[in-house]
Amino acid sequence: MKRIFSICFTLMLLITEIINAQNSCKEIIGYYPSWQMYKRSGAVVPESIDYSRYSILNYSFFAPDSNGYLKGTDPWADTLLLRGRIDWGKPQPAYYTNTSLIDYAHLWGTKVMISIGGWTLSDNFPGIAADPKKTKIFVDECVRVIKEYQFDGIDIDWEYPCYKEHSGRPDVDKENFTRFMYAIRVGIDSLGKTLGRIDEDKFLLTAAFGANKGQMDCIEYTKVSEFMDYINMMTYDFNGTWSPDANHNSPLYSPEKGYEGSLDYAFKLLKEIGVPSHKINLGVAFYGRTLKGFKGKDPELYAEHDGKSDVERYPLHEGMPLYYRIVDEMDGYDRQEWDDVVKNPYAISTKDQAFITYDNEKSIRMKAEYAFNNKCAGVIIWDATGDYMEKKKGSLLITGTPLVDQLVDVLRPCNQSRIQKRY
Image 1 (cartoon, helix red, strand yellow):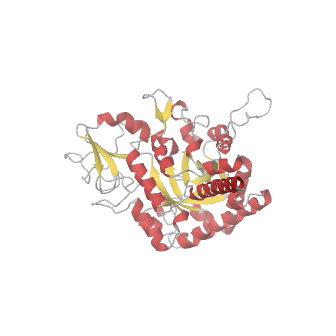
Image 2 (cartoon, rainbow, N blue to C red):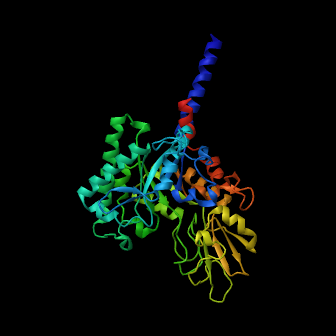
Image 3 (cartoon, rainbow, N blue to C red):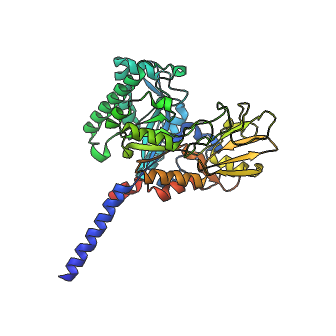
């Protein structure tokens, strides 16, 4: 009898442990831009991605035309990445099985969503959201691409509602965005019921939001958070060449000087508005921003500059390098500093009059701990390929992912729970 009781008690502990693990897992969402297929001679492609590190990958980007129809931005990349390697031995278009980004991801329990929009592809959103007929076309297109490619949901990257430079309409975008997102929710939920994708397996709906206060003021967060799965906050790009002083790209806390935007500042604004923590994914940057030209003075944090980026050092990244490139060039900076106010590093080259703001393993870990301690849903990464480190510069031999490793160590990604359920 004691033996039976002991076995039952042990089983109960195991079941409880699995349930707690599933409930405590976090989202680690990596954006994978289609153009990265060509970078570094294809070093980070479906075959080489470490899917164990991500709960969701957002494939970026599809673009809406002025009527609401969707199309990929690179047909060749979309074909190879979303359908798989082409079998040229077949008379009709055919693809090798289990060779697409989505095939590989699903084997690891990682979901793949299609991200629609982006900085250069957002001009048509205001007109679509304002027109019920165009909204209907857009929703039907979302359903189509989910079915065609086996995506697990829709991520809207409208940058930004009310932003006039991208055809924004400050008088109506705020309300239109809510109606637009709700229409998508209804459309993909209907598809989910038809296909049996409900409850935990339902098609997801998320959106990427600007984290500056002006951008946040144009969103009805309390309304959209009721029916959206996640609010993905782009808590980066707070400062750059447009800023009057040299400041941090993605500070955890507000700087002593200059613009007060930060991850903490944006999160607290959302909480004040009433958005529940479990709906919020905070953004982490796997890239940096550079500055050159300090008006005859030495480059320093908070120093005035000429608004130029370091394209000489990072020509292929237009002065906005991914983390692996920053590491490659770090010996060229004679000062590597840590700002203990914002909890972020920066580096200076006095010889070249150059400044770079970026994130490293320490700062990424602190942001992961912030998300965990504040009971957030998890984090989003722009972009997921940024920390795929090469054995040596130009070798194309990937040896590790040090930044996302910090996230995984703190935030156990939910794809691990999905694998547990499967097996």
